[in-house]
Length: 515
Image 1 (spheres, rainbow, N blue to C red):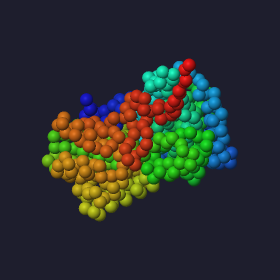
Image 2 (image 1 turned 180 degrees about the horizontal axis):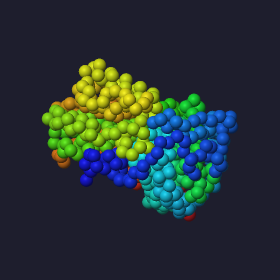
Image 3 (image 1 turned 30 degrees about the horizontal axis):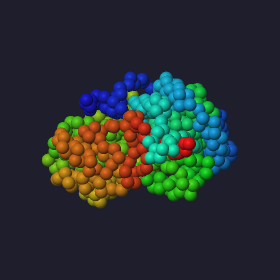
Image 4 (image 1 turned 90 degrees about the vertical axis):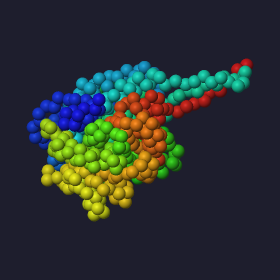
């Protein structure tokens, strides 16, 4: 059952369908917390940059400073890589049971500190507190999941074609894993990657997004308390200026065996090129341009509620947000009317720390400028604005939830990933046309299909060139599901049975001669 708009959606923005009790908060400037750290984390030690440089982490809703962290550079990254490589020589020999127990302790510690972790996340990212709590629970689920998965990593005994030979496969951890994570899910994208690597017996050097390093450092504190050995999890913080050089050294270092990245397709391609010289295994979860297809046979209430759920969480700043709404002509006008009403009634913009807020700020002013340019482009090319369509009076980082109709494939809102709270609706006539429109992009991460026709569900789901398809469902993320894209939306898979942990494993073939 998808809850009705205005109910659970108001309270928790549909995040993983979990309801939270929302405490009242006072205006906030700087947070004092046992999980707030002002140092990076290398070899189990809280570490300053070798240069001594630091930078401020600010609240996107207010611009106020919420923390200060080291602005590290290549020298710090090389030190972290060397530490991780040295630790890998012993950590790879630990048993799966031992690693499992440590991750289970980390899981319990994360859930035991959910309120504190959620406040840190909201202060540096801006998303509403209920959403942040949902993300912390989602992130914790990967600790638990990979704690269980690591005890099921098994080789095989292969029937030999030769009477004098035995054939086996052995699975071993790949080595040091370089990771670069995004700001939109600063907790869950770390646990989805790092817990899989640690479960496999690998060590990690992670560069969190420059906008949201505090969530990464808070996780380091909890991993330390869980007894995960020094040098297994290393976090290098840096501001935007040092990020390209740090990414480059992670990709080019011969001591790093794997690169995992979540971010834009453009940056992913750079990292792939940089990793080519050392022929690294790469996991890339890249940009999306998700179609949201609504057929005439769809349950319109379900489609509208799902649109609200998948479009407006994190202010539309997720890689699996619906980006192109394709609505069949018979239901088009009614869908536009109902979705417009729901946006007006159910979206409350504001500081994510305030009670009742369902849409926080965008991550920074540059993001607002981009979204506004997309809307202006659509308006100039003839799109109709039903609600929003402008910057919010709340400040430079806020944008009004927006719905456009009459959108065409020539508009930026169709051609590129919006990453903002903008719904752009195009009308189509036939199923064949919808599939052509949906697949007409280089992206292939997620797609959504709404229809009551069971045969149509299968036809369209199989025809869509996307790694994830939601059928009459707007929220599909869970640790049990396999996450990844087709085409330029990435390589590899995260989460799921077998797939997520296999990214961090090498398969060795053993052939044993017998007398």
